[in-house]
Image (tube, rainbow, N blue to C red; front, side, top):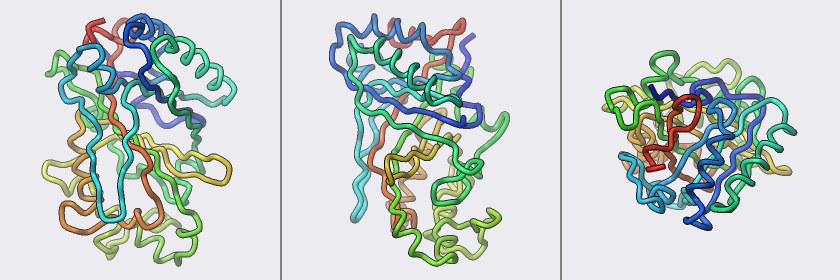
Length: 293
């Protein structure tokens, strides 16, 4: 029976790297993916495939599509290539580097490295703004239900859909706000993570309260901070049994639902966005059969 890639449900690691690939040679894709399969355990290395890849293989993954072209006044969310996305998890940056190099070699006949971003766990699971991240994440069976396609969908059981975004923070802008203004933008107190009952409607917590949607919009967040030089932000990663919950949240955040834009956009911006399908494992290896391989 297919099983989910274990890394999806595990807590975020101490260190990570996110690598994405563009398509360079479709004819070599089958061999490259079989080589990748031999390197992936689904726990320390989590893999997703985008619609660009499935189209090149003439495969159909129901529910997989491109990242929506959502815009709002003063905001455009960039869309990145949707071929292969890999989340390397671990606690040793050197080991992650060498694993990344090995994967790049395996995919090189068919794919070119598009982007590589190192990430890390900060202050016991906080965003670089200082606020706890993923506070409302479902746990246990609820996490499995939110993130993994169930056995009632035989063709995709054990797989997952992941939405990824790279957010770049404007630290100077955020740090210029008063402590109260920062808390109101998030909707929680940084000091104790308590939710503010009187937070404004633009507060991020109110914009994305998962139980406030109909149907409820639960996702399993596995986001991690990133840094390059003095720049940094959040690699947002949300797993779901479909993209519906993420899209409901994003639509409300940009104000398309009620005209109220999430206060996050005042000091951080998403510079990329992409959708991927994470295949299940079968006999301990990536199940490539839905791709016709």
